[in-house]
Length: 73
Image (cartoon, rainbow, N blue to C red):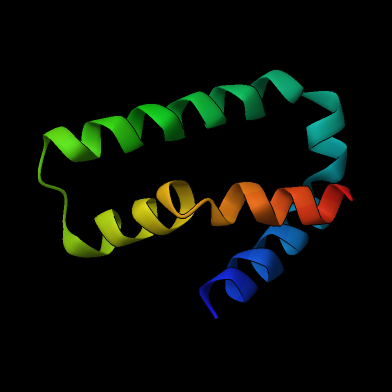
């Protein structure tokens, strides 16, 4: 169920941001790096439970990367 929610949100984000993604790809690469750093830092410091669960679902369970792969394919 979580994957379906992430997939639908990813589809909406890609649809609404497609012109911005084409125009400023470096911004989305920077966002990916920030998300990776946030994931690493979340193991070192105690984040609120909702933030930790969101980061864990998106990054550790690979739902975001799988959703983006599904969109591309």
